[in-house]
Length: 180
Image (cartoon, rainbow, N blue to C red; front, side, top):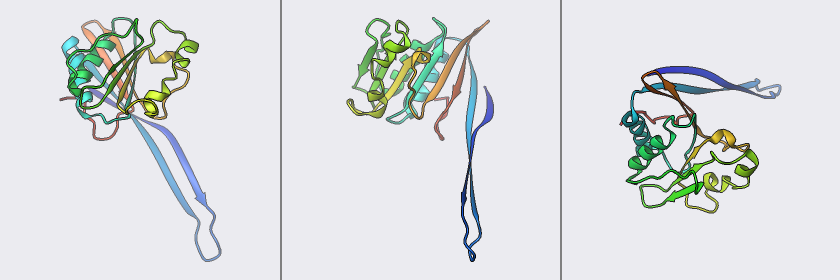
């Protein structure tokens, strides 16, 4: 596993001082950690998902990216195990599977067969905003089809290696670890 630290944004706020008060400068640095983990087999990919499922809180959104067969659904199956949901099916044809019987609800979305316009027409923000459904964890396969993204998300990109897969994870909340 490797760790890359990227400074994503620097915001500076300057408060105007008066004669008797000095100028106050608040400096905020937002650091986005990128974790790269080798996943030698489907069990390792599922274990990564399970570790996330055991730790993530309601309102978490996972944006899953990767080629066909790279392990996105396998990762969500592990996520389900971590939430106490034993069976997860691919929603390729149904688009959205809702699982409400675990520690938290899991909303598994697959945008593979949709264009960006069609994906926008699903109004998926109702899932991550929790406005029409109980807040839970939202896992979106083929999330690159979205034109409107949640304000905060965890991005997981799965890619092929000669011996297995590689997962690149960004946007992890503090305190979440990738091993169970």
